[in-house]
Image (cartoon, rainbow, N blue to C red; front, side, top):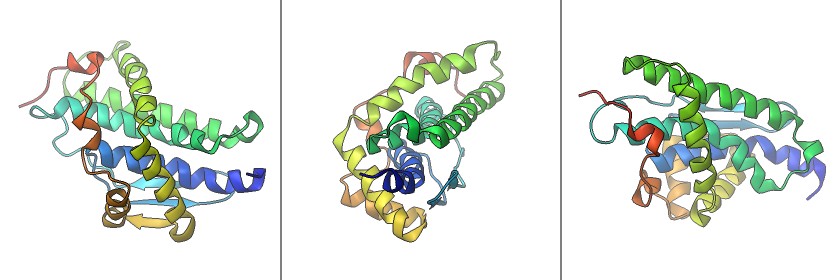
Length: 192
């Protein structure tokens, strides 16, 4: 694949990674958009935090939100980029890392837990779980299929994403069929 083609596909793969992981961990959202070209012009629109800190699924919700934030750069790696092609990816990776840390801090605040270094420990614990998710061939197929749809459509609503995910053999909460929250999150007190 040539340099121009890889760069053209970076944003759709990045945003598809966020959307597929969100879908597979049960984080709802309104839409996903991707505008190919230089710079990262895409986003997962309207993610929901509703009820994420309550009940037995609270820990899954916490990990799912952090995984969703970290998923974009990992999805880009499916393109097999060379280091010189990764400058824009590095900027997006830093933004996604910062967003994951902010999510962890916000969650700790809502749970009235001290932040100290715990937010970073949560992100560090979830990062390998996010990478592991991409070892699943159905998740990779979902990212590839959604990225291809984004190349043509540029914006897909949640129901359109759900349709693409069903074609790839994925369902809401798919990740939790075979995984449980990591130890760093398992120790968090949940509300309600």
